[in-house]
Length: 356
Image (cartoon, rainbow, N blue to C red; front, side):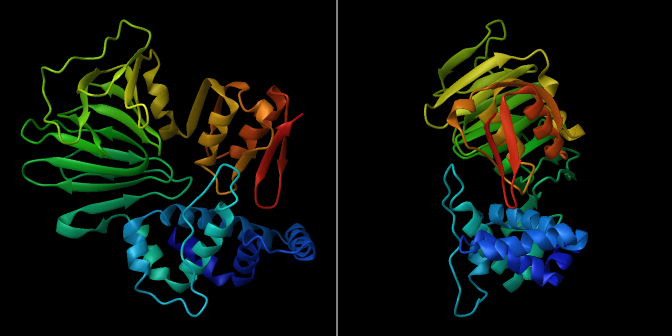
């Protein structure tokens, strides 16, 4: 990764062109020049793709309050701009944020290296682990537990003699927890937490919800301020689906999947015969079983710096059944185009899906 950043900084022409395009101020003549050059130069085309990917990583980092505080220590000249953090469905604020991210990496390269280091020391011995877009990696913890981080994921690890605490800030991770009756293992997800003694489970945290899939053992879901109780009721695996209030804690057995919605403040729980599909990303695969197209696009966007947009609301809810490789989003899109009444148009900076 460090080598990619060095190349990013060295290839100023490609970086400047990408920033110019993402600024929203590029003229048709400028864009035509870039397209022609990328068609005639494989090296330049590769530099453009690499720059877009790294800028997407930095865009995700612009949500990190600790990194933003650190960046404030570094002056960026008279043209210094605040990071743009707001976004909407059509991505209109996404590209300016990438442009600012480029300025950030050129002005404060040291901050970027720190953010993507294997582990970054925080206060009081807390460690931060981060993955970039399209990357996954395993982290071996001091207690023997292993956490595998999926794409664009960030966690904090806080271990002491009394407890093992993980703060999951964003993304997805698979947890293989070493048994330790004296030190419960807790993952904090905002105001909710997941606690275990020794088990294996997958957690995916999104802005509006989190999804827990338990592969081994028993897990408790509860309010962060709530003490874990072995007497708490378990979700009933005999029912096809349960939707209940999240007021009280619940135990979750192996084979169960639980979704918590931040707005409704409810748990949706169901038994999944193929629960291992929730960790298939560890092998580079993602399966969609009767998922609407917009959810498939949301998932694919997690693995690519060149973002995908649905241009026609009529096709948003088309159902998709497929298994795709996360490192070949282009191939996945070809498969979707062949199986659905859609057309995929790959532009210079984004991919548009329209009705065929």
